Length: 452
Image: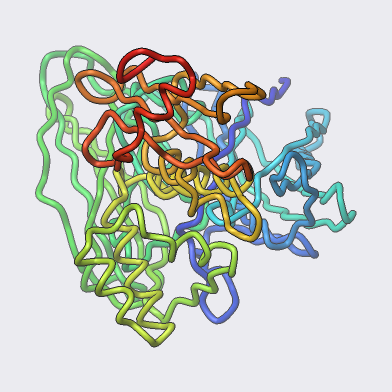
C-alpha cells in the first residue's frame, strides 16, 4: 500500500495566546522538540473498509522562525519534512518534503496548516520536522498510532476539534461536505471564544428513510458528567453516511483537561457507536505581548472610531486601559468572529501600510495625508488619472470609485504648493471636504465645468 500527500494548505492566525510564556495544548496534542516550536494533531476518516484518510494538522509558532524582507513584507521560509513508518515493517516508509512561506507581522503570529495521507490498517510512527531555511533551526514531533480496519457495523470517525465551522463559500482545502472546518491542532479553548467546536463522520447507518439520534457530553478528569446536549433526531435521507458538527459553550468551566464524548444510535437497527476526544480549557491570565508594530496600527483609530469612541480613547492615560479599550474596539468590528482572523482589522492594517509606504511626505506619515486618508477609508480606487509636468498648471491626481454608493465617488488631489504633498480639493461625497476654490484649479487645467 502506498501513501500519498494529498494536499497542504495554510491559514495565518493571531487569536491564540501564550500563558506564562508558553502555548497551552491538550494532552492528545504532540509538541515538538528543538528550536522551532510547533504542535501536531491528527484524525482518521473512512475511505473504505481497508483505507483511511489520515488528516494531520499542525500549529506553528512563527516567533521561533527567522525572517527575510521581500517587497516591504516580513516572510519566513521553512522546509516541511514528513516520514511515516510502518512499525510492522510490511511497507516502505513514506518520506516527503516541501517548502512553505509564511507572512510574519501584526496579524500573522501563528500558522495553522494541514496535510492528508491515505493509509491502510496497521501501526505507524509519524515524524514531522520543520527546518527554518533562514537560520537552519529545527523542530521535530514524533508520534505513534494505530489505524483500524473499519467494521461493517455502525461506527464513527475520529473527532476533529475545530476553531470554526461554517458553510463553505468557495474553494478551500479545509472544505468537507460543503463545510469549511478550520482545525484546532492545540485542542484548546479560551474564554474569549468559549465554545468547543467539533466535526465527525458517521458510517454504516442503515440506508433507509428512518432516523438516528446524536448526543454529546463533556466529562471532567474524574469522569463526572458536566454538560450534555439534548438528543438530536436526524433524518438519514437514504444514506449510510452522515456528518455531525457541534458547538458546546464552556462559559462557566474551570481550567483543566476535559473529555468530549459523542454517541450515535441508529433507530432502524438499534446499533450504537461512540467516540471521545480530550481537550483543554484555559482560563489563566493570558499574556498578550502586543508588538510595537501592532500597537502602532491598533491605536490609529482616527478614521474608524465614532467621535464618542475617539474622545473616550484619548482620555485614557494607563497603557493597560488603552490596550483593553483597543481589544474591545477591534473585536466589535470583526465581521466574522468565528474565523481565526479579524478580516476588517487585517484589511485596515494593509491599507495603512500602503498609505505610509506610498504617500508619506517629509516627516509626516502617509496615513495623515489626504490621499492616505481616502485610501484607508475607502480602499484602492478603481481608476487613477495622473496629470503632471504641465507648464501652466499644478500636478493633480483624480481617483474614481465606480462601485461605491449609488453614483460612485470621485476625488481630485492637487499638489498645491509644488512640494509633492497632494491636497484634496474636490470630493463628490459630503463625507469628505471640497475646497471653496476648487473650480479655480479646473480653470488652470482648461476644464469647463465642475468635473472633467
